[in-house]
View 1 (cartoon, helix red, strand yellow):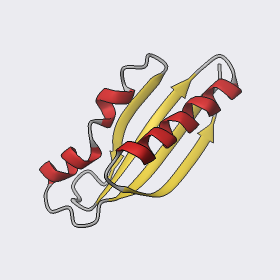
View 2 (cartoon, one colour):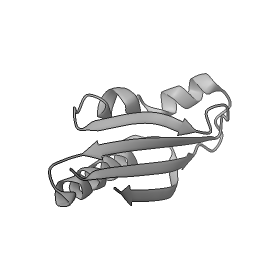
View 3 (cartoon, rainbow, N blue to C red):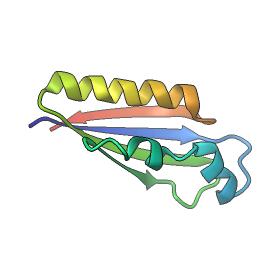
View 4 (cartoon, rainbow, N blue to C red):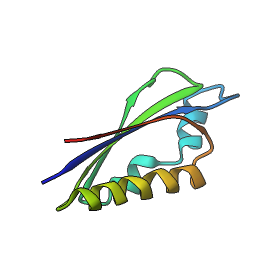
Length: 93
């Protein structure tokens, strides 16, 4: 069973507190964690106000499905999150 690991690094210019950071990131865990084939967590930059890193682990029956799900996650985040995507890393296991 293929596994995809998608890690996104965000910049949050002008963000002044952890509370504002949570609001601007817009509940990524709640939105994407509902899907049984996706696990999501804030994986880095947890104590910084102006940056964040999130990792999504996607499992599916084929590599094509994993790649498609990763693309959908990335596109939805770019449309809905009030932050700049600075780096995207994809790894397939």
